[in-house]
Image 1 (tube, one colour):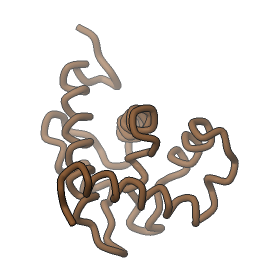
Image 2: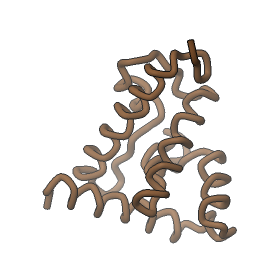
Image 3: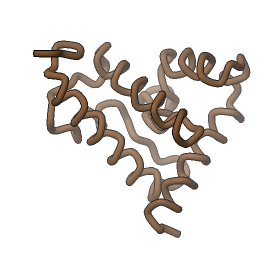
Length: 129
């Protein structure tokens, strides 16, 4: 049986799909200064039980972002933030530097433009105004 971070590979893939669908749906309706916290995302994933601040969650979000970056030009996990800082963790920014091949991904302007790209895509995809 193949596994990813101790989870059955089939369950892992289902969990990624659950998370991706939830994030797209939320992106379409999120207002300014509304956030999706790691703990919130962990609680909506039903296929597997995943700790909000685990290495597994980091990898799950990285895999989702790699996929959405390649297919849509944005990192979907930009929407998932810590309650304390209201921005994603260091792993997000390290992956962004790798994918975008640009050190400017730490600038606030870049981060907020990434979130806006996601919201625009989600609203168009779901037909939300």
